[in-house]
Image (cartoon, rainbow, N blue to C red; front, side, top):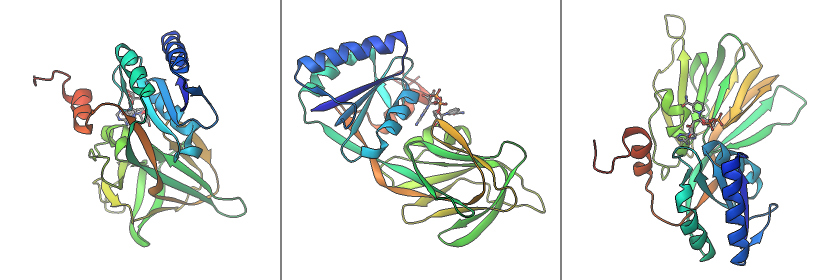
Length: 269
Ligand code: NAD
């Protein structure tokens, strides 16, 4: 089996990467950073997102797994103490695969330039560098509201525990094929009115954002942000692609949510 290891780059992560690489090679696995079947990230959730985007072009053939060298991550959920066990599990392939939905974002310019398509594992955020964003929000081809405020966050189910949660969005189990739209400080008064609640859209519903005044936006896809000028529309929906996780032991989503946000004490408390 072909594998690759993406490290956060700090001393501890690099050391774990070197140990894992050496043992997996000794077990007869092949290191391949072009088209790996297994991508191991060593660092935190940020490193996992980095690894996902590095291999986003070969999601069908690449499975991901994360080791954390800081605190427990949502994607990076193996501890450095468990690395030996993980190496043996990987060497025993084949492994079980769990798939989660992704968000597709298509940014269309006013004219001339080509549209750009992105996949997000956590979310996309649409903001502006100054003032408020104002856009018409269409859902499934029909006008829903005119949004005015700091911006909108559109997240995947596995990203619902990330920025979306900080904005008051709901946590969605990743077995549900959906995306969630969460407002960032919407203006609500007699002139402007938005729904105010997070919206959860099923996989066959598309959300289209059409700028009203300003055409320049700061758009983030997971951990990176860029400025897009001359934007005609931003289309969001559940992607046809899915992310594949290599699973070597059960770690149910709700356990992860509980351990990250409520308590890591197994007996409650
Ligand atoms: P980062 O890598 O430093 O991550 C910031 C925090 O978000 C870390 O504690 C990380 O473990 C956590 N995180 C990332 N994905 C998560 C998920 N799916 N569920 C629960 N927690 C998650 O920051 P970065 O590299 O700049 O951004 C990566 C991601 O971090 C973004 O996609 C965003 O969702 C998240 N983030 C969240 C907040 C917030 O909650 N206020 C702020 C910044 C970034």
